Length: 191
Image (tube, rainbow, N blue to C red):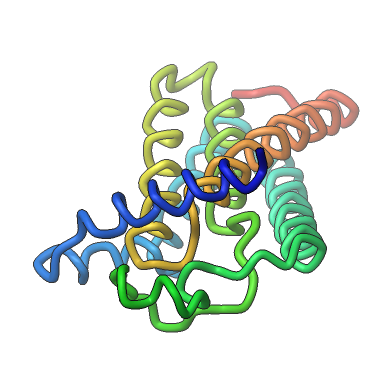
């Protein structure tokens, strides 16, 4: 059964990956770059500061740093544990796919980009929900676009993405609860 799932996963990867064209490659390379969204993260921290204040900003920076470290490290544990080669590392796929990423990497299950972006989306979206009700939907959409970029550039299978998004959502929710606990513990209220 697992072999059949992996077969479908490969077929879906090839379909989605081959939807790309040279016209759009530059855009997707920008989207998949980790540094591209630093302004978004800065904006989210600014909005959190504006609504909660300086003391809360320290809580947010610490919990976000812990969250990203946690998701990144757990992702690496899974990658090494499952040792599933990335599609760009599969010699029998390379002629059937579009590989445009800067590098391939060794293992791909599950996607760190997907888990980190989803964790940030859920965490920030839930923190900002009392003030910006639709922010979470925008952030979830952004995370899905970042996740898809990993298929587009040829470095992850769809299951890598789905599992990364799922893990990221769980991590984002856990760290949202942790930050909420800290805000309550220190008596920090929103403005």
